[in-house]
Length: 115
Length: 110
Image (tube, rainbow over all chains, first blue to last red; front, side):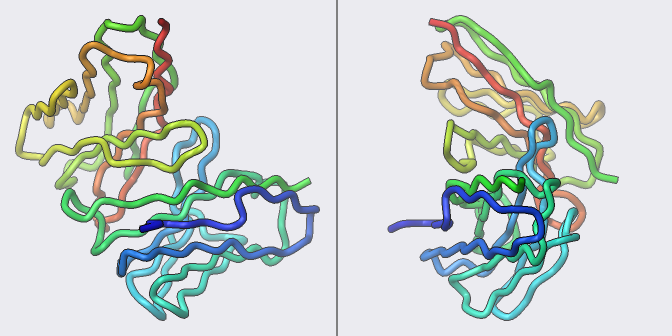
């Protein structure tokens, strides 16, 4: 049981390049989330999804797009990377909306550097 | 808006107790959580407390909630080097999405 798997683990981009981060979960969870983690700022929600085919904006959605074509996958896209998007990105999933009996399960993160 | 704050760093000696503090703003939060992040890994749920409770104990962990002051704390008894990690406080805000604090780096000195 792999849980939540993120690929790639590391990536370096030049300003203006595009890329897609892939998140896959094998727990049949309905909800999936993308967070970014920056020093001194904790985790901030970028986008989330409450089920296959749905997406919604989180706290810091600008510069990112997402898609949830299959229940088990949640993709995060950067169309034109900027240095401000240098961060560690975490994907998470939960059975329902977050609660004590439906905790978030996190992937191990993708470290992205934009030069 | 919703906001969760924590001190950034705590250093303790092995065997001592650690107390990590958190303040939050959303009084409607139903649950408050503590997550642990070990180096190079994602966050894992450590424990939680329902908003109508004052205290919850789980082995070496004690969670205290002061709802009036919107203050949450995590006490780790007999802290071990394996407890070294970043600890995140989180509240379930009005939209039922987790709002995370900034994280507290706990360094345990042998």
